[in-house]
Length: 177
Image 1 (tube, rainbow, N blue to C red):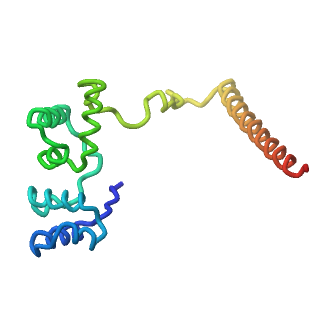
Image 2 (image 1 turned 60 degrees about the vertical axis):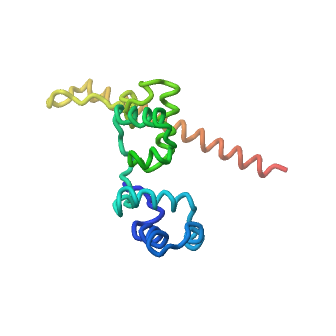
Image 3 (image 1 turned 30 degrees about the vertical axis):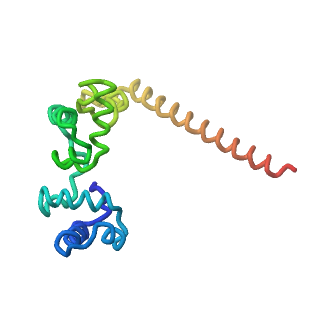
């Protein structure tokens, strides 16, 4: 699934070229195209640093290594870089990325910067064990399997009946004056 891009590459390039090559002002250009000044400034700085490739949309969910995150955070501290300048220096698309790294590092230290697994935990992915043999079920196993199925079906019907009764009770309350 691709990230939704609010402004396409051609639009960004047109706006940047209007400011840089046509010598238009930053604010008039931003108001003309109904974009924020900060977005336009960021586009211009990425264009000046990386060329037209700096305006291409960044890949979604880029995973940064622990060493890279530490390098960025130490550069900010040692060189007194702002978040915007650090984004430009390390080609990070958003200040919020670095800000979250700072908060995690402050709260949890190095543990906070390590890559975290995504998705459900293994405990949530419970599946019935597959049968190990290809032999047909014995009569007892067939009956146990059918019993398990019927119990599950019974539970579902009980829940459904409870929902129907609750809905009827709601309607009866509405009809009574």
